[in-house]
Length: 415
Image 1: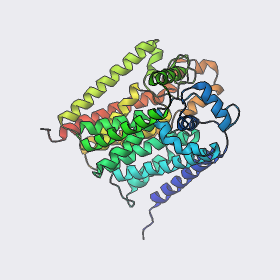
Image 2: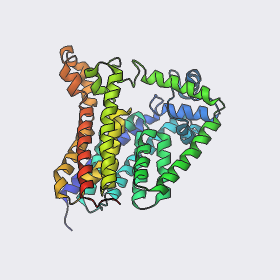
Image 3: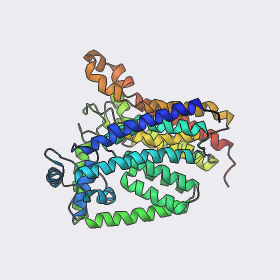
Image 4: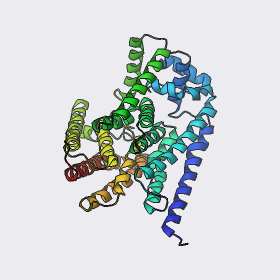
């Protein structure tokens, strides 16, 4: 039997990265430290007891009781996420946190497996090994697992839902996409929108119906007037997204650079949050119009290409952090496809851009304190270097849109 050196190297890399996931993502979950899972855990505990999960004072008191001193939280997940996380709230914090981390690690494996299956690659194909290696080295996945973010689990559900849809298993696909949407809406909702455009009504119907059921159950469990619940939720949104908040894209938030929506890079030019939002949404709407025109004109042959383009467009104007960029690994399925001489270089550029995103921007943001102020205060640093992730996403959008248009032009016309 011939030994494939490339495959051995990739397998070694995958094994090393798996160890990194365990050491930096799973092992720290044994501690009582606060992380991104704190919100779903505390919110789910309050939801299960019929309390208002968006009551900050109640959440702070409960978090101290369940997680130790200084364990404060301002819940912001939708009620459906607390319903889905309710089983974890039956466990002590450390056990629940460990289970969540293990589920996240399984999610990374599910993402790699789903991408290989969506691309119709086999285990003897080097491309399958390359995709798996990219997934396991993709920095946003490592970051998400380290901080206990739900992104990696949600992305795994989305990829699995797309794979099931490709196998015509519409009801299961819709159900899984509904769960993903109820956990983090700004992923699954775009995929369901794509299947609506594709007239995959069984997928959409299953997703919408299950989503409605989960939403009704989630809201009914909370013994509070819906108007009061909404007011409390809006207050927490203001805490996170208001001026100086952790998710504020303006210069009032010195820790804004992990945000990857276009407003982060546009605000220094516009000097106005309203103008930055308006420009970001204008660029999004232009891209969405081109995407929709291509879809209704000829429709690209590759679902992975069309969905990746739509998801990438959503990053332009909707709140996203670096953790969320893992969903864009879906573009690898199209990037590694065979054929299409006209788009061969474009496929390579897509793969290259995904690899650029894989590096993340944590090195630049973390190294900032070690540079002199004349560097970190410069326009080059704040407008180009640190928000490079945002500019790379914008370029990726242009490349994917171009590929969608060319692919649709070469596809049979729709009647």
